[in-house]
Image (cartoon, rainbow, N blue to C red; front, side, top):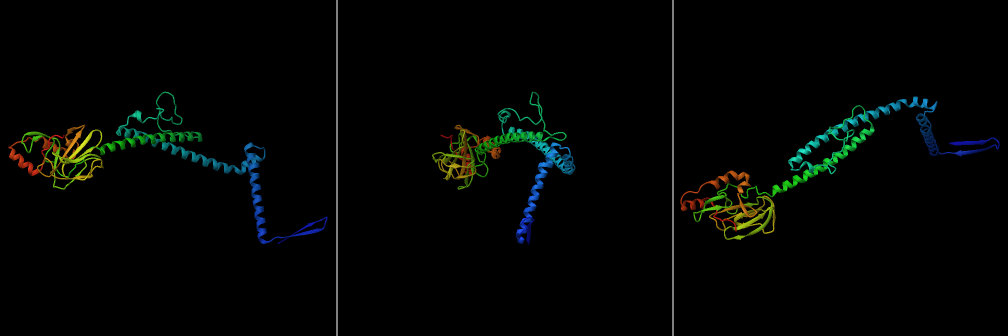
Length: 348
């Protein structure tokens, strides 16, 4: 493409040679300049005229952009209404969550004063009076809310949710603490099966005289697994003249369980064991008449009835413990040999 430029006075002609790609680039550059110019005119003249109310131009601009402003206004109103509804629903859910948190905290053993914020007050709801007198309920704006009201509501939601998160963190910590305590309570049978002799006075299987039996007896074949009734630390794992091969587990707070007459000890002193872990095998070592486990529970060095801890076995064990001893010594010795109970006196 050629463009000829002629100047009248000098009668000289200039010829410009444009390749196709140069022509296309020139057209695009011209179009971009037109768009930029029109945008600048629209922004700096027409919109300014509409805002400042120029006498003639503002009327023309309002006629041109009237529909556009109406659409924008309608869109904003619809969005504000939708946001207000969502904020109201979220606040109602948080109020419900607060009630649930208070109930759960009560079940977890937390006192009301322990879950109150440091300021001892709840964040004021948007539009709620902060003076004396109780007020409450979720904030659901009536009519069409303003953007300022929505911002206040969102700020309240943020602060309130942060407080609820802290409360549930405390509840989680307390429940975990209670769970750890339950894991340290010996309420699991150390040997599968029934008990043959309970806690209390009975006829001694060797002397025939009345004596205190300080634990529960679990008859089982030699080599049967003995499991820890709860998690704890092995404080004794040794042979004893009367208890035979025995293990003592310390569960904390002065609570100790004892496992006696084992044929083999698997845990050693200082070991940390968990509930249900096999720590020994059933035997008949020490002062015993047959293979069985003698199980004791001591609190502060004082023997307790293990049946009170082993809830699943409590009725049977209690019944055995309360059964009166009758008959001659030979009859007692035969029954003892049949079921395999021990004649272990009180612990040293």
